[in-house]
Amino acid sequence: PTTRPLQSPPAIPVFGHAHLLAPEFITPIRKLTAELGPTFALTIFGRRIVVTSDADVVEQVMYESPFFTKKIAGLLGEIQPVGGRGLFTSDTSDPLWAKAHKLLIPGFGTAPLKQYVPEMNHVTQQLTAAIDQQLGEPVMVTEWMTRFTFQTIGMCGFAFDFHLLDAPDAPMHPFIDAMNYCLAEAKVRSSHTRLYKWVPSRTNRKFDASLALMRQTVEEVITHRRANPDATKRDMLNFMLTSKDENGESLDDENIRDQVITFLIAGHETTSTLLSWCLYFLTQYPTVRERVLEEAVRVCGADPTAEITPQQISQLTYITQVLKETLRVRPPVPALGKSCVTSTVLPGGTLVEAGNGVMVNINGLHHSRDLWGPNPTAFNPDHFSKENEAKRHRFAWLPFSTAERACLGMAFAMLEAKVALATLIRKYEFEYPRAEPCTFDPVAVTLKPLDLHMLFHARTEL
Ligand code: MNH
Image (cartoon, rainbow, N blue to C red; front, side, top):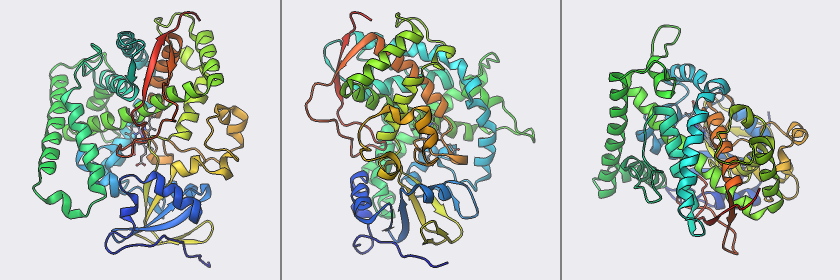
């Protein structure tokens, strides 16, 4: 077929376009999309990357196929030392990915996740107890949401108590500092030449020491569970320790360690980012906030300390729309990478060659006028009414990715976010004290709010 060359901005030697994407890539990618259209090409240290937010192109790229696959590169390649051969940081072609994927999928469905709801409620109550100590004061929202999501995944997944919500000034667990260091450094590494990480610098030594600490922490958890097996518990750790595939094989301890670290990484900042932006949007959109409150009270009752049941959670349909809209406007994972395995022509006539990378521009998809109408930046949960959802392109909304390499924790994250939101909205009025809108953190790995401080006031009546 006839092919159409893709446009690219001017490049420089060696870096190509890499310098354009540091310290953050959201803004430059948004500008390039406005200038060059939804699909264009960049060269990153000699590798050609097709960037796209065209839903038809994305549709073709997302499926594991003879043409495209997930192959660890770029930022994910720098996170790989941390995630190891855990699900998130392995190639689809890695047999261990396929094995772990098959083994772990059954543990993350709607039914098995119900067991975590009491613990999610419990951690939510710990969160509100901490916030109660800080009423009327500016609270660093992302930090508290991170404490909440981390405590939740630690307790639900591995019965591991990071003690993050014991008191309003509870120290961050060393595991978390170590992990944050590694993730931030991974982002720095991804915008440097390959040499950077091999020099014996202070930052590189700290990276290695932090990784060692993380591994040791998790290895102790595994050893402890092996020594004290509890057959009544079906949490993620027990699931991994006991599940066997059709050949009677289970995951070895090294891989289980990598999976645990992976769940801790993948499972906290993303959900924390979702909740933080959601609370912020509720301060900006009072009519949405009132509907959220109305639904929470109607479905869960007036007492915000009563446990929310799985049955009630399934009725929180407007809150689900609000969370989905938050994920559209601020996708915590704003882009993801795929690799072309066999040269092919994309819809629209673009040739991608074997070895090329593809950047699926999720943030771009979520802000496309073609897909979302003339005002895609406005926060409007009606985008996710049943009828609007049915009308839309299936690849217009991809905060959790899709197909084989989709997020394993989607249902877990949504469950946790619903419990938290339905509780917080009934307990507090939120105030965003600044006139300027909240922007995103340019150095974070996820698209999280920068310096989001809010005031929480006790609701006096419902
Ligand atoms: Mn999660 C993969 C987004 C919560 C565990 N997750 C992905 C991917 C996206 C994503 C996007 C695909 C990345 C890629 O293609 O490189 N995840 C999210 C978002 C939230 C989230 C937006 C919350 C909101 N994720 C969670 C939670 C867990 C989790 C919670 C664990 C309990 N995610 C994973 C795992 C993978 C993943 C594991 C890798 C799955 C695979 O490739 O097999």
